[in-house]
Length: 460
Image 1 (tube, rainbow, N blue to C red):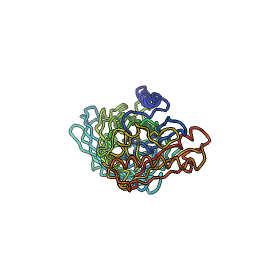
Image 2 (image 1 turned 90 degrees about the vertical axis):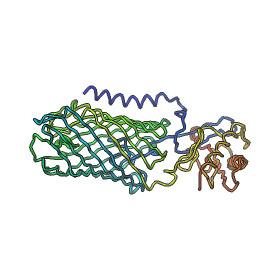
Image 3 (image 1 turned 120 degrees about the vertical axis):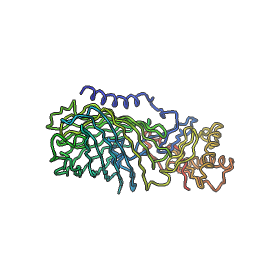
Image 4 (image 1 turned 60 degrees about the vertical axis):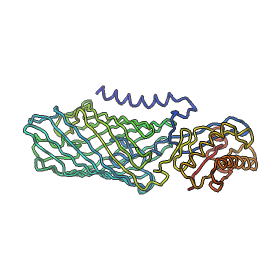
């Protein structure tokens, strides 16, 4: 029991430590990362420029084996993008010699595969279904028991409390199949509900999820107690409360994760300290650098075993894997752009890690910014951008006419330099909005800083 609480504590501390080690005002890791918006802020009348960047997990949604966003077993509180459909297959395997024998002796070997699909019919809401088949050989002499397909329907609605924190109620309906003739099952309908929580530690690409789920008894077999088929499946004869905690870190195309999953079986002879639980480690991989295709490989390490009839057995170790694909994402959401060290593209917007600086109260570029624009020109050419909008914004410090003219002049200055790099002039459109499109209140300095920015948006 102490070990499980220690692991919960370590995962929580890992996320908080990573957050605390990021200095205030830092833009996070030095390697390029995907960001939600390009915002270059400039204090009017000053030469200093600051980059405002943000990273939220809702931009990096990868489906779990429930068809939801999540890690592997622990769910995220974020829904799939509206209108998207995700589907895939997952697998689990273990072979151990210390399985519960219930008088039959020998070990056990289980292999399971899950087909899943998820769909978001409207914003913040996701429906999913998972069909799981599994088979286990166990005992001496060896016996085979298999399920004929168990289906779990699930629904969740995400409440984004802020950009970095979300809560989602979750509901499940399980239809468990009969087992083979070795142990026919009785009533197999059951339901459950709970909550999922997700936190994004912006500006780090670190994300933490927590779940608490209650479920009615999932199966009541009528076969011999000595066989106890639910022992080797994800079913329980008891009311259950499941706690889940997970942390994941996005490092380019790799998303390593760690999660702890612990289920307490009420009214059983298994205490919470020795209840079936596992810690899982692995990584999700996006080989095409987009949101459509995702692979997952990892392993479970068993903590509590659950060596009691009617309680699922947790093996010492288990191999897990998954392949998923999401359709109906917009072209820019799944598109793989050619980028450079300092210039990235996310959802049609240029993410520029360095700043485009101008001379004080002027539209004249600083020499170091000309080099950066050369790099931007290369990205435009490599991606064959047909139409690019360059937009300047200011705060409300000066008059409207002054701000409109300065924001447009700077956008045109950028355009002239890019045209000088051999890009056709008709590729660019420029717009200066001055103070007309603030992102925050101009009452505070923080709000004014957020409003002073330059944006690059691909139109086609």
